[in-house]
Each structure stands twice: as structure tokens, then as C-alpha cells.
Image (tube, rainbow, N blue to C red):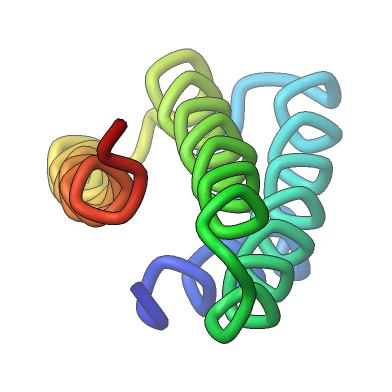
Length: 104
């Protein structure tokens, strides 16, 4: 998960040369900011009750979904498949954790 955050930050700061348009760069920066914010919120909710944790998981999963969508639309690099796989793996891990934590 840390690797995804580092990749997003580097890509946003470096201008991600393989990005097709200015809109993609803007979307990548926004996705990186949202991802960082939701990751921090999820870490902060670690000792909170289930309702707070579940809300944090939902927001983080939505953020990762947005990252995946930006990659699918904008990533034209040779690492596109690897980036998509890494994001999908993170989504699956967080979804599994959320389901375990948020059982009804």
C-alpha cells in the first residue's frame, strides 16, 4: 500500500510524462490528494468504533476506485498493467478488511 502512495506522489510531482492530457495530470493530483487523506483517516480510525472504521473504509475504497479509474483512463506508460494490478490488489485487500470489520 505504501508503494502505491509513493507512486502516486512521484507521478503527480514528476508530471507523469505518459499522461495524455492536462486533465489527466489534474485528475492524478486530485486522486493522490484524496488517497492520502483517506489513508490518514483510515489510520486514525484504527482505535475507533466500528461505525467510524466502516465509514473510513468506505471512503478509502472509493478513493482507490478513483485511482484505478484515473490509471485506466490516463496511464499510457509501459507499467500500465502493473499499476492497474497493484491498485486492484489494494482494492481487494481493503474490501476484505472492510467486510471483516463491518459485519452486520
